[in-house]
Length: 103
Image (cartoon, rainbow, N blue to C red; front, side):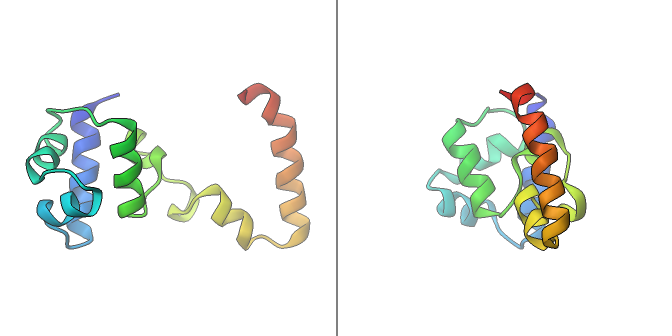
């Protein structure tokens, strides 16, 4: 896990949304200096802070941690909601087969 890359992605997403460090800090109840340190890769976030960042900017954990976006930039659940019933059932069956290997 590369803290510099994680910080870069957070900063890019924050700027894309037109938020200042102060605004993001207020949204997730941390100091703006802490946001500065995260964005520069100087500090690692707690799990709680990571979740708060993700929720505040409507991001995926995969993207923040690994730089990977799901298809069309939406989550698996959002993709499933867009599928017709036949395709959703196929996806559910595929997931049921994979689930034992994930646990």
